[in-house]
Amino acid sequence: MSERAELLRMSGVCKSYGVGTPVAAEVLHSVDLAIGQGEFVALIGPSGSGKSTLLNIIGLLEPMSSGEYLLQGRSVASLSDTELTRCRSDTLGFVFQFHHLLPAFSALENVLMPAMIRTGRFSDADRQHGLSLLDRVGLKAAADKKPGELSGGMQQRVAIARALVRSSPLVLADEPTGNLDTHSADEVFALMRQFNRDEGTTFLIVTHDPRLAQRCDRIVELVDGRVRPTDVHDMAASKA
Image (cartoon, rainbow, N blue to C red; front, side):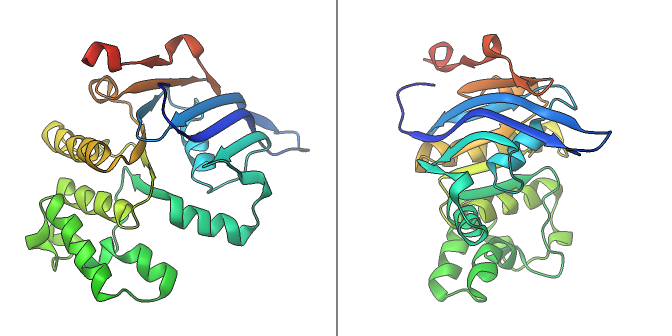
């Protein structure tokens, strides 16, 4: 990691399932990971290596079994359930392989859903912000269209706008281009890269696509639940 202000740090993080049962298994083994503000990081590894589990822990969707996780300098383990929910809402945006847009709502309403969930409504200012985000992802004209009226690539662009609507400093993307053709995947990747460069938003992207991974600032490889130190490398020098 280059000399950036630290956004998150994990030290010795382990995750086990079925503790105390005959089928107990440790999925993550003493993971150390640091990500700086404004980084654009790829997380790669074979199926079953623990990538989704690690992303869920980073995203405060499930707890670690042991270790230390600091998010913006705060120990996650010390947060109450209410504080975890607030932290997730204020700090994290999510983009998934399957966009998870709500079919009964328009593109704009889907973008504004995080505000709706938090406050039960959205203001005129929220609406204008949502329209601005849709404009930036090239979909302002489709603001009133339902997801079923949009292509897969367009739906994923709506999902990116939704992840950014609360100006979250960290966006976690789990195979965001895995369900798209090559052209649409390149468009979606370029949009995320644009927000990273223009807004300083940090991205951690799980991908199986080596083309996209090589276009990130840094690659972190997870193998059998462990970060492989020799394969964690900074790509910045090669792009300079």
